[in-house]
Image 1: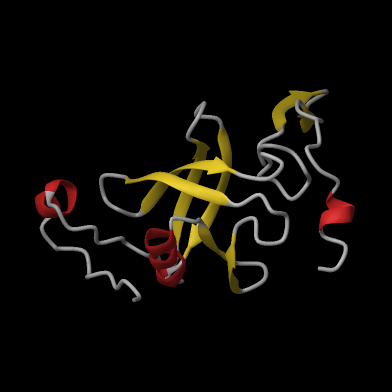
Image 2 (image 1 turned 30 degrees about the horizontal axis):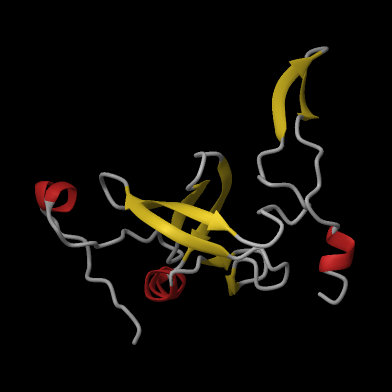
Amino acid sequence: MTLTFASPPQDKAELESGPAFTPRFDEKGLITAVVTDARDGELLMVAHMNAEALSLTLETGFAHYYSRSRDRLWKKGESSGNLQTVREIRTDCDQDAVWLKVSVAGHDATCHTGRRSCFYRTVGVADGEAKVAITDDHRHFDPAQIYAGN
């Protein structure tokens, strides 16, 4: 079974308070997905979903995303073993973004760099230039070993 989504209602009150989940995909057919750890709330990643990825996520309970760079659907953790089991999905007021609260299997890492979160760097200014600094250099797995055949 593949879920289909109705078009968002024109009535703002219905969109914001009605019972129907009617995601507002952008002009490329994507919706932003913010992903946090269900256990401690840490921000793990931000990704995109098309209707198929969102449908598969709802149907299977495992997070699926749409890769803009690879132009294809992917099941998060399929290669690394770090599958994301969805514990809760929320949508924002105008239904153009979703928030997934997940449990991460395997190495408890989400980032392809081997880190727990894709947000492992801070941004600041030094000597008049924007710079990044690594704040989490702990690798939960070696990406070269995990993704060697990809």
